[in-house]
Image 1: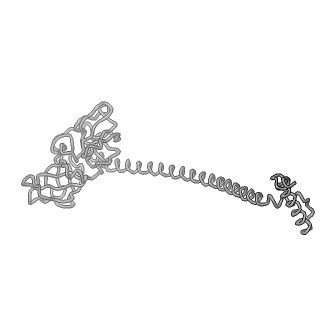
Image 2: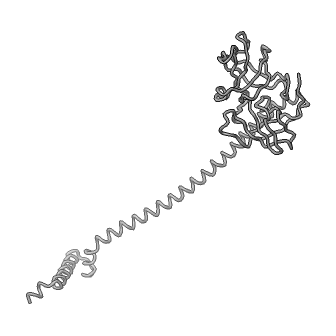
Image 3: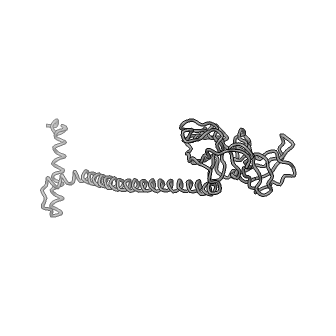
Length: 280
């Protein structure tokens, strides 16, 4: 008998009976109509119900946030598409502005020189290792282009054709030391020549060389091609003088010239073809 009272099964049965009696007493005291079993189960499982309720609410919140995030992401995607469209329109507008600038001054040049013939070309490649800004255009000999032809942006000279192939050509810019053309100061009439210089090219400038210490060329002077010889006519704008300094490698002076066009970032240009060179 003592063994029965001490057994684990007896203790479990006793605990269950106690819980049932406690539930009955609680229900009786509160006047509830629920059964003893349901009252006890409520007491026993109430904590579990509380936890389940919290978990349910959390799940609802998570799905609510997920739904909100989905709507938010859709709105972001819509705005990104609008921004992309506006950027495309802006790019088209900028291209149109560049073309207008390209043709506006060239039209005046054409009106002054009806015999001039131009081929429009697009820059399709650049050598990042070339500090003088040479580039490749998408027109060549099949379009009437040949080596030595002047390359213009509006009425500004930006270089010459260095090599021409059937469908493309390579442009050597006015920043290149191998480039040379006779020029003059449109105010004083002083004549010299323009060439490139490695130090000035790093600043996007070219060099009006072989000036004397008494030169009339000064800051702000506009430099234009003289058209003395070759395939580059008179009257093309090279640029504006930035400063005049002594050339330490010789006994002369030079002027650093800011090109009239952004030589290193040309996207479109005009090639002057079929021009008969000579003194103007």
